[in-house]
Length: 240
Image 1 (cartoon, rainbow, N blue to C red):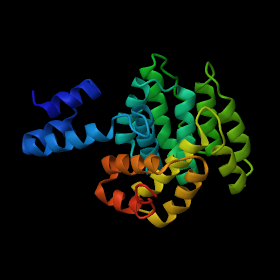
Image 2: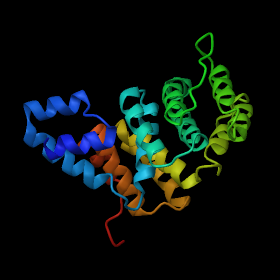
Image 3: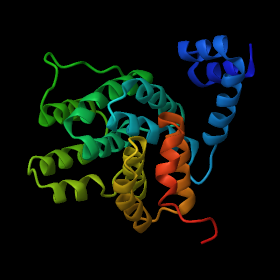
């Protein structure tokens, strides 16, 4: 087995089909891709654990469940709790609304399954934000669901400023990481000018330039090199 195939088998417990096909058609391409992925996903300014859940949340925000599920598994493997994961997905809601929240239900059900605590799906598929959040609250019955309950109360007000303040507030996840998650949401969709506002909010919440660079690197993995162009426009030169 090539190094690339062995790497992904270790990460996912099996070789995903897309990896096998990359190897079959271009083994050199897979080796180079594996190298950059392995380098990016090491502990850096952001930990490997944080990188996995940030990528999962970014993909919920851009409504891409496939990558979201891969990285949800990584987040669980590296020790994230369900309440922590929920807070990241609430940041995805802040970016794209109920559509992101609905997609995130797939990741949360998968996370519970990986924890050995499969959840019961509701009889009717949740449609409204309130239905989706109540589903999550019910799933978290044996966990800490206080943040989600209070978030639902604020979301019901339909006040954007209050909602943003609540969802970015310190809970199981820091405001710094939540702001970095919002940066990634904009960068993965190549919305660099809008991301600049969130880059400043992340700095104000304590994020360093190295943190921001790590966000750019993980965006490369899920959205390609153009995402680095967008992030780098607002990144300070090293040493400044």
